[in-house]
Length: 103
Image 1 (cartoon, helix red, strand yellow):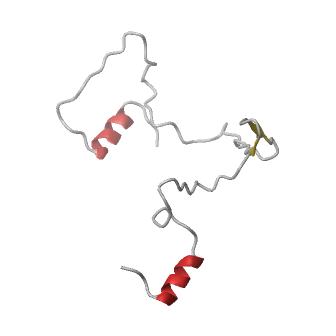
Image 2 (cartoon, rainbow, N blue to C red; image 1 turned 90 degrees about the vertical axis):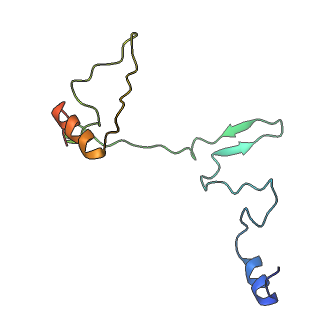
């Protein structure tokens, strides 16, 4: 089944997508190139194009990670415990608040 001639001309003007191209077509994720390929198969990075992220000052930041404060770091003798019952989200948040979590 083929589209009509006017529709086919309109489809040709649209960007190519993975359904219209062959199996080797990779569209990418719009990140852009941060350098260029050399003729010897290497890659040179242009550091003017590399993205840098600046983290703001978080000293007065009042949100906490989603871990209770009384939880200790994992030691070498870590054991895995499984529960037989399912826990819903409200019960998990209630237990987290009881363990010292802050919202």
